[in-house]
Image 1 (cartoon, rainbow, N blue to C red):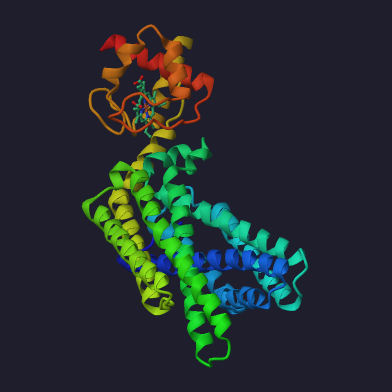
Image 2 (image 1 turned 180 degrees about the vertical axis):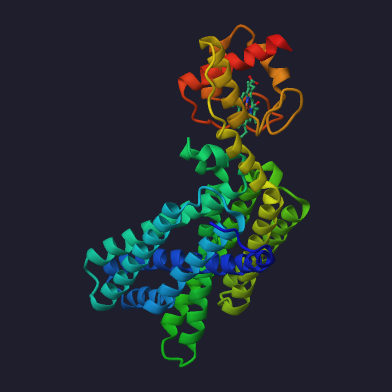
Length: 414
Ligand code: HEC
C-alpha cells in the first residue's frame, strides 16, 4: 500500500489528537450512561419507581439519542483507525483486525439501540431489555479494551515483529490501565450528564423531586469518578514503557490529577452543604482532563515511534534471510544465528546494553547449561531489577535449542 505523502502527516496527526479526544469522551459517556441506565432500570423494576424509570430512559436518550449519533460514533472510530494505520503503520493493524473491530462495534451499537427501544416501549418487568442492554455493553467494553491494548502496543515497536508468533504480547498492563482510565472517566461524565439534566428539569419547576434525585446521584457519581481518576492516571504512568516516558508526559497527568482532586474537594463541599453541584464547570474540567490525557498519549507515541517503524522494518528484513544448507551441526548454528538476528537483536547486543542486558555478561552463567538457557528463552522470568521483564517470544522447543546452541558456541569463541 502506498505510504501517505509526508506533507499530510502533520494533518493526520493533528486529526488523531482531536479524533481520539472525541472518541474517548463519547465512549466514556456511552459506557457510563448505559451502565447507569441498566442499574437504574433494575432498581426501577424492584421498587416500581417511576422517577427511576424516567431517569433510565433520559440517560439513554442523552447517550444514544438516535441512529444518527450511533452512526457518527462508528464513523469516528473508523476514521481514527484508518488514521492510526496511515500515520504509524503498525503491522498488527491488518485489515482483518480493524474490520473485526468495526463490525463488533457496529453490533454493540445496534444492541444498545435496541435496548433503548425496548426500554422505551416496555413497562418495567421484562428481562429482555436488560439482557440486550448487558450484551451491548459487554461487547462495547470488549472492543474498547482491545482498542486500549492496541494503543498500548503502539508504544512498543520492539514487540511488533513478535506479535505474529505470540499474539498474547498484544495484551499488556498499560492496555489495561488505558481501559480503566476510560471507565474512570465514564463516572464523572455520566454524573455531569445527570447534573445537566437536573438543571433542565429545574427550569420549568415542574419536577422538583426528579431534579433533586438527578442532582444528588450526579454529584455522587462525579465525586466517585474524581476520586478514582487519580488512581487510573498513576496506574497508566507506572505501566508506560520506559522509552515512552518524558518530563511533559509526566507533568500532564500530574496536572490532571491535581485538577481531579480539586474537583472532588469542591463537589464534597457542595454535597455536604446540601447544595446541588453545577454541571457546566464540571463538564469543562473533565473535557480538559481528557484533552491532557490525549496530548500525553500523542507525545508518548511521537517519542517512541520517531524511529519505531525503522526498527520493525529492519526486523522483518532479517526475517527474510533464506536458510542455507550446511553440515548438520553447522545447520543448527546457522539456524540459531538467524533466529537470534531476527528475534533477539532488537533488544540484545553481545557487548552493550539495549532493552535487555549485554549477552556477553549474562551468558557465562549458562556455560554448559544449555537446558537452563533454553528454558529461560522459552519462558523468561524476572531476573534483574535494573531491567524490564523479558517478554515471552513464543519460541518453539527446536528454535530455542538452535538459539541456545548458537549463543553458547559464540561465547566459546569470544
Ligand atoms: C523485547 C525485548 C527482548 C527480546 C526480543 C529478547 N530479550 Fe532477552 N532480555 C530482555 C530483557 C529486558 C532482559 C532482562 C530480564 C531480567 O533481567 O529480568 C533479558 C534477559 C535475557 C537473558 C538473561 C537471563 C538471565 O538469566 O539474566 C538472556 C540469556 C536473554 N535475554 C536471551 C534472549 C534471547 C536468546 C532472545 C531471542 C530469542 C531474547 N533474549 C530476546 C529483553 C528481550
